[in-house]
Each structure stands twice: as structure tokens, then as C-alpha cells.
Amino acid sequence: MEDYRDLLVWQRSMELVKRVYIVTRLLPKEELFVLTSQLRRAVNSIPSNIAEGYGRHSRNDYLRFLNIARGSKNEVETQLHICLMLDYLKPEDISEAQAVCTEVGKMLNSLIASL
Image 1: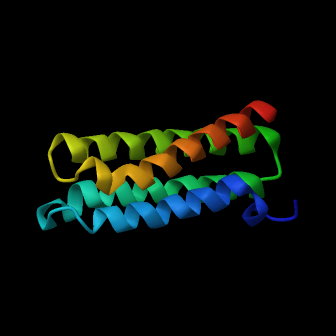
Image 2 (image 1 turned 60 degrees about the horizontal axis):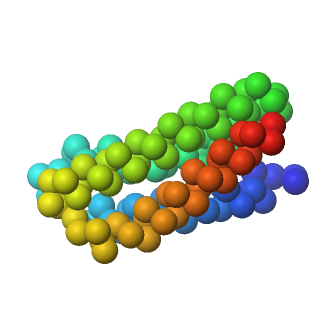
Image 3 (image 1 turned 135 degrees about the vertical axis):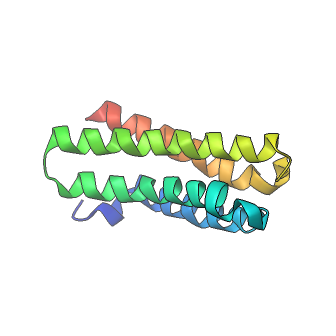
């Protein structure tokens, strides 16, 4: 692979970014600077850390950044559950984002294990 953009996990995490941005548009305006902001920062961190780690050209650095991406993925899942718990969103609102999030998590786990 010549570029991080060739990584399927990066491509799917970019899809997750898109899905989360769509979902956060449904949140109440009073959550703009809390849940909306937190979700968007966390989801942006996933592909960003995959890319940064890939660019370090060091196995240990790459693993460190992949683990940060995995932590951000867990943060996104938690924030989505908080949105459900507070009745800001319905399960059908986040089902696609959750599915992609689960997929990205499995891909990150596999990539980390392979390194």
C-alpha cells in the first residue's frame, strides 16, 4: 500500500464520519457545544489517527495511533448510547452509524493484531 487512503479501515472510518455528522444534525441545539461537538471530535479522531500513525513509518508509533483510533471509536459508541439514553435520538436514527462503528472496530482490532 502506498497511502493510508488505500486502507479499507480508513475508508470505512471516513464513512463513519459522514454518518455521525448526519446523526448529530438531529440533536437539540442546546447540545451543539456538548454532545454534538464531542461526537464530531471523537469521530474525526478515528481516520485522523489511522492516517497519522500510518505516516509515522514506525510499527510502534502506528500501533499507538491505531489504539488511539480504537479508543475514539469506543467514545463514539458511548456518546451515541448517551443520545439514546437521553431520548435525543431513536435507535433507527443511529443504526447505520452503529453498524459502521462496529465494522470499523473489528477492522481496527484485526489490523492491530496483524502488526
